[in-house]
Every structure is written in C-alpha cells, then in structure tokens.
Picture (cartoon, rainbow, N blue to C red):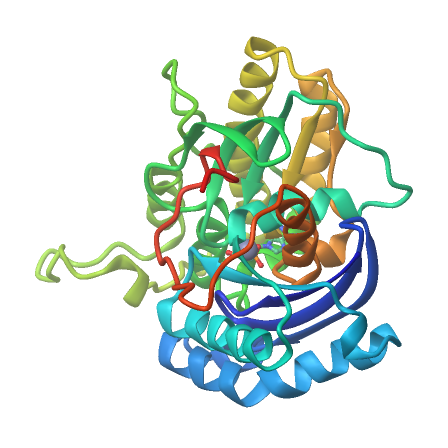
Length: 352
Ligand code: KG4
Ligand code: ZN
C-alpha cells in the first residue's frame, strides 16, 4: 500500500511516499529555517506564503522520486492539525484538490500521531509490543502518552507552559545562538561543564506534567545583565536580553540541557514503571538530542527507541506512516475535511 503524505503544519513543506507504513520510498522536506531565522522564531504569515510557493514542486518531487506513477498511490494523508492555521490550510487544500482530481481516498492526520509513527520508520523494522510509552518532545509540544495499540492513546501529561524545544530555542536566543537553538545548544553543551551552574529541575509533584518556564527564567536571570530599577519589569524578557560578558556560553548550555533532560527523564522513567510498558518511544525534534537519548537509556531501565535523526524533526514520511494505519483501520475523510489548530492526541484516534 503506497501512501502519499503531505505536511505543512509549521515551517516545513514536506511530502513523502511510504510503503505499508514502514518503508520510506521518497521523502522531500523544504525547510523554511533561513526565512524565519532573522525573527528568531516562526513567522506565521511568511510560513503560509512559503508553503503556497513550495507545495506543488515538493509533492511532484516526492512522487517522482518514488519512481511510481501517481495512479499507483493508494491514498493521500495530510496533516490536519495541530499547528498554524494558515500553514495547515495550504497542505489540506492541496491534498483535497489532489483527492478530488484523482478520486484517491483522503486521510486527515494529527501531527502528533505523525511523530508517533516516525518510530515505525526505524530500520531494521521491529514491531513495538504494546503497551509502550511515547514521549513527544518538539518545538510546539511536550506530551507523555501511553499507547496501548495502533491509534489508541492515553495522555498521561504534558507541558504546562513552554514546550521542550521552545525552551531550547528561547535559551538559544538568550545565548546569542542561531535559530533553532536546540542543535546549537547541544553542540555548545558538549564543550561545557554541566555543574558550572545550578538550574532548577523537576516539577516535584505526582503528576506527569512538565514545566520549563522556571528553568528558562533561571537561565535568563543568570546570563543577562540585570535591568535597572527604572526599566519596566513587565517588559518581555525575550525582547531585551543583554548577555553578561563574564558567562561561559558552553557551561550555561551544558547546565541548561542537563536540567531539561533531567526533568524529561525523571517523569518518563516513573511513568514507564507505573504503567509497566515494554519500551519507551521518543519522537519530535528534541529526541534528536544525544544527551537526552543517553540519559533516558541509562536511567529508564527499558529499551528506548528513537527515530533516525532526519525523522525527528517535521517530515511527511511520518504523516504517511500514520495514514497507513488509519487507512488499515478503515477510516477515510471527506472533502469537507477541515484544519484543527488545537488537537490533543488522546483516546481512540480512530473513533469516527
Ligand atoms: O518536531 P519539530 O521539527 O517541530 C515541531 O513539531 O514543533 O522540532 C523542532 C524543535 C526545535 O525547537 C529545535 O530547537 C529542536 O526541535 N531540536 C533540538 C535538537 N534538534 C532539534 N533540540 C535539542 N537538541 C537537538 N539536537
Ligand atoms: Zn512536529
């Protein structure tokens, strides 16, 4: 079964063809990072315009790279949400147009479920044994899910403020590192001393929720020049970071990353034990982080599965993989499919 996946929920225009939900046949990602870098974050209007410009060529390329005629495709899976509405609309409308023109079935996919199914694209392929615990850590999300079967999720917790990737990006910006901050902080951290600074760690409660804004604020207090008394305190801290000259960027990066990883590992390991899962699956941009992978493997006491690095960040192969299992469950969406900006992944994703 060949599924064409389309993803435009944030700042990547992506299309891919995946065979039977497990084998990538083609995978095209047009990143807009350069476009947004000067704003230090994704600029929604620019993102949708760039998606409009790129989508036709990206989809064409994905089908061409797959080396099969368009007719051989069995269905079109597209990210329907959560994400930026203007960006989502570009992908959904394009997919609807294709479905209308070709009569192919249409499948609307939850972007978070896409990240989950990036784990089905690991090689060599090995079917996870349910129940598994899934930690999705990306620029927009931090979600801890119990997965009991295909499309079956129980949301155990998530961030109550910033997403893990967002914290990386904000601290990266404070430290004067390029956008997105995650990979740059990881690189700086490799050269730094994690105990040179002491930043706050786990949200010490019984929940499986995470909080990163206290950590971000602690880093900000440590590394920026204090504002004078006459400065308005309510001014957004992200807009006026003046870096102290006597700090070590590498040490701050190492200490920040260490604290953030501790927060993630502590609760994930506790949930894995409480729900007696067979395996921990990590997905999303931050799951590319080697320190997180190593600490999770060392401390959770269970196998930890991560996607290949190029599938951690947004891509359409994961959307096509999720689409395959949705298709297998007998689901189809109509041409009235609409985007859903806020869409938590919990319960039965295949419920009609
Ligand atoms: O999954 P993704 O492409 O976007 C969302 O769906 O939100 O993740 C992007 C996020 C960014 O915040 C980026 O800084 C972070 O993933 N990231 C990393 C690393 N690579 C990407 N964070 C930490 N370490 C990395 N190596
Ligand atoms: Zn994502």
